[in-house]
Length: 117
Image (tube, rainbow, N blue to C red; front, side, top):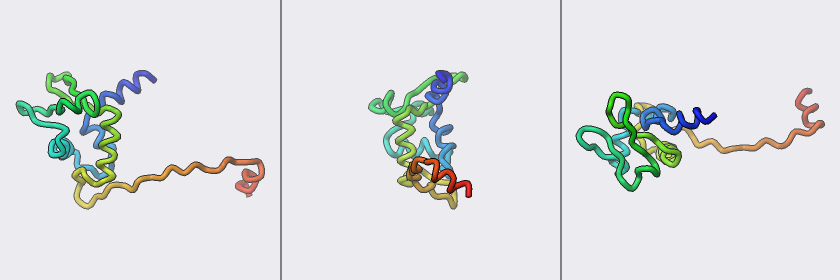
């Protein structure tokens, strides 16, 4: 389980955006730059100081380039931006509706037998 959490912690911005249906992954970092979370330094993406270690972080990729990693609060931010339609979407796509968590009533012996019939 520790490895799974470690792998999740190192997910990049674009990789995370791929999980949000309909998001234009080619525009995500540009959107975050317009919103003042990221900026470009020497042709590479970088995290603004006040968000580094809070929402996003920078790590060196194996090829020597910097990679923007989304931390847990950053993942929550991206999901919120997605639902608020503030991330660029692919043509003809809209964000999925927020799902309400509905907790089913507790099954009793009587309700279980009703379900069987």
